[in-house]
Amino acid sequence: MRLPYLLLDIDGVLIPFPDTDGSTPAAHARHDVVPTGRSADNPVTVWLDPAHGPMLMDVIRTSLVTPVWCTSWRQDATTLIGPLLDLPPLPHVDLPHPQITTSHPNGYLWKRDHVDAWLGDAPAVWIDDDFTGLDHAWAAERTARGAATLLIQPDPRAGLQTEHLIEARAWAERLLAVRTDAIAAPSETEAA
Image 1 (cartoon, rainbow, N blue to C red):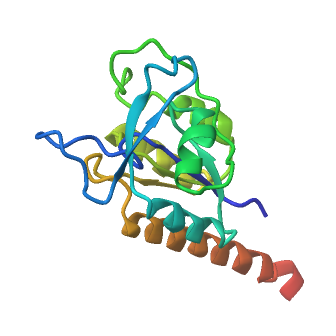
Image 2: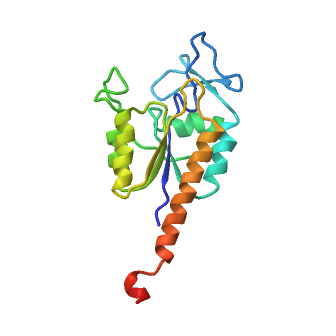
Image 3: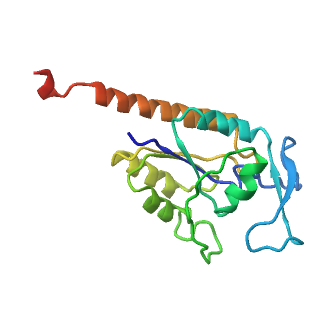
């Protein structure tokens, strides 16, 4: 039985966008990181909540999901962001570097087609701050085809909250229970 993927975005989820006055949530700490392709004298400042690491590890340790970075940070998510949150190395969806001026060039999140191909028919809970109605319709269509899909959309100025991970965990637990019941239930021919 294949575990569902837990797809994790970073910007707007772990790194909140500044409020209109430039402030970030009080619990977040400043870090300067040097992404691939940037010089050490030109770091990027990120704000991370140290509580996010333990919160994510609580879900990861359940073994109900397979965590995967799904972010434009790509491999830098594992080498730069994960260690700041005490997360183990996680795989990442190898997203392209699109030449776009909006997150929704076709009316939906630019990552979606790449994620869809990467997932195949695997179940997934995807946490990202940038979904549109077309993304939610896509998730409903995948679920109807038998590839259970849950989209969780944090407020990009607040980022990931405890309730988002509670929702992801509860969804994965329900999915496991349904699959376990389906395996345990005898078929009509076996019952006859």
